[in-house]
Length: 100
Image: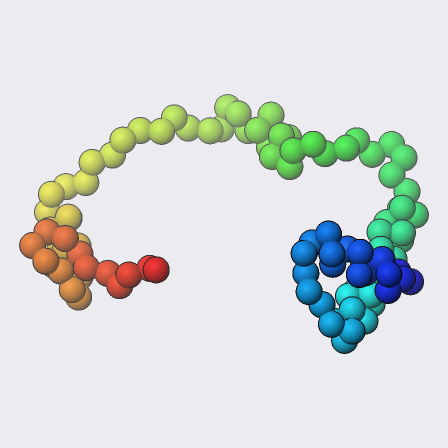
């Protein structure tokens, strides 16, 4: 188990002000994480190639399957129908609620 002094040191490095209760929680959580890494060290990886990029093989196998991007223009009538279907609009703009 990780020591309380180590938790204090990590908290200081991360500039976190933690109390005694949080210190105990972090001690348990960090110990569990480190124990998990220890169990990963026991996994047999002999003969398995490392993966540097998850899509690397996908790109190699399907490069010929990828299509070229082409611009598509929609019929003006479709745009008008979409604008008309919008619940709140002003001229040719659809109003939406603010995101931020």
